[in-house]
Length: 108
Image (tube, rainbow, N blue to C red; front, side, top):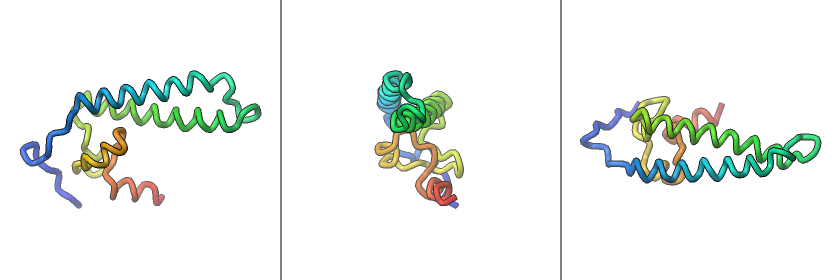
């Protein structure tokens, strides 16, 4: 198990930039949901239904990331407590887990 980095070793994350990015992504996903929701029934438009479902899951993940920002735990894996590499957060700003932990979750 990796040891969490102390604040003096951990590179500084642009938390305000991360917040702006997350808020913009959140709004984009909410807009998709608002546009598709009236037609998003499995029997009427299964593609819209799946798209709305996926967007709702992403909204939940983004909201959780914003909550971690507020709590001061953004960028720290919720499973093992180690730092999530900045490159991962750049690719997936709402990532809650480091790659090894997420791989274990995905493997089932």
